[in-house]
Image (cartoon, rainbow, N blue to C red; front, side, top):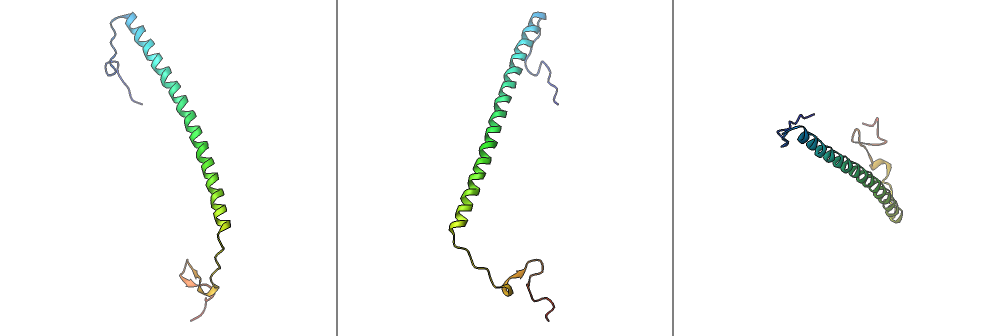
Length: 95
């Protein structure tokens, strides 16, 4: 955490009354910042909710697009390759 001195934030303490007044100003600013954090937190929650909804809708769109496309026929077994060894599947043990 960063320590900030009264001089760095421009506070002057000319007497006890001035100290009380400055503290009141700082309390008001802290309260304002807290309410801003609460508002931003609510906005973040709403943004997350909308992003999840958008992802759900995209899933539906992709499913619909996939259902409306004609299915590709699968390649014959001999022409597919085993990606781990780059050898045709079904040809093990042949020389």
